[in-house]
Image (cartoon, rainbow, N blue to C red; front, side):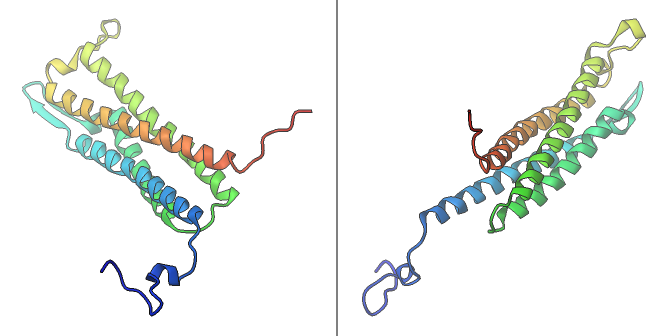
Length: 189
């Protein structure tokens, strides 16, 4: 026996009345968007933890992420973006109508946080490039020769951050679609 039926033989879901197929689609989209918003949480926290634990000591001295402003910014940006993603996933998961002000808010905040994390990744990439290649014109030597472990962990954290950027860009596309689909196409006269 598959499921319980009433005296007339109808399954329990039929007793509740007809279900709108549009409701199923909205529920599925809400769940998918919530999951899409949770992926950057995991990525940002991973990048943050890798960078927070990034320190190396050798005969030349010690080097920590906190010694470089770009890596401090990477840690802070990943933490803030993870918090935003978690909060936005909770809000999106709530079953209620999507209003135009809410769509504008998500659109603007998704843009802001996409650019925040993109900036963190790019500035960290620049510092890693200088640490790897150096710059003889300003007497900046290649640091990764002496602190290879540090540079490797910083590279891993930066790559994870760029993967998070891809998810933020996808969220940005989704939020822009949700916003601009609320408006009619312009009338050509």
